[in-house]
Image 1: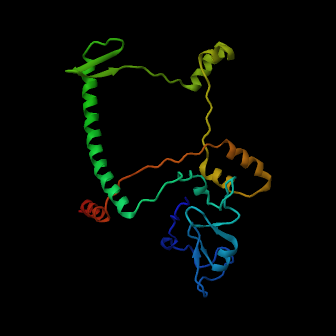
Image 2 (image 1 turned 135 degrees about the vertical axis):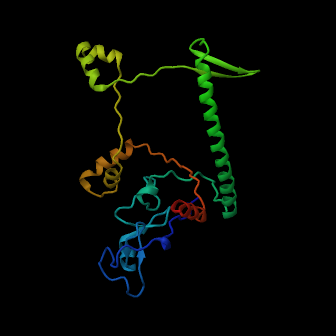
Image 3 (image 1 turned 45 degrees about the vertical axis):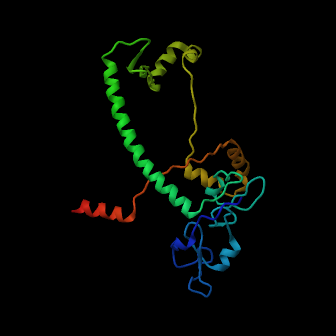
Amino acid sequence: MQAENSLHTEGIEARGALCVECLGGLDAPGGHVVDRTGAALCPACAAEFYAPCETCGGLVPADEALRRPDGGALSCFECFGRPAAPDGSEALTEEEVAALVAEYVALNEELKRLEGRASEIKEQLKRAALARPRVSNAVVLRAGEAGVRCSYSSKASYNAEKLRAAEALLGAEGFAALFERKVTFSAVKGRLEEFLSSTEEASAAAREAVRAAENRTEVATLTVVGRPGEVKSKKAKSKS
């Protein structure tokens, strides 16, 4: 099922009074449109140089749009990196979404209260365990048939600069028997996105190699936000 366009361009304010492509005025007959970032375009340039993203519906330069290896319509960089919607998934109605939001907000408040109280109890139980003897490096606190185990473990970290002295004394082989080196890579997001969306022929093979090595996942995070009226009242109270 194709995802419903989620970008509402009518809410995007145009940046500038000239078309970013031809530098023509935007007050000509036909008005103007904006791309997904808010850049103003005359209708002619939008039709010739831009294409709508299949997912969000926002206009993206045709030479910067991405297409999946199995074909399909063009996508902007952000939508290209998102996983496809599961087959058979159905969009919720506005009423169903509103009901879920209301329930989630109520549950979120209750969860915060419960988590706060649980954290307080955990700290008190840890202090109680300190005064009791340990068995197999653990203390079991009981209340009838129920019980809570407080286990103890130690973790060590090592200063890389200071470990070089030990490596020099042990030698490469002896040091490798005691310590394992780990190398990780973190993308410089802005530069990597610009590199992957470029069209330079010289770096085409490198771009494909990076895409082949990439394992992209999307993490969704829910945050409860207050009603506009509540936000204003809090600001007014803080000023007084």
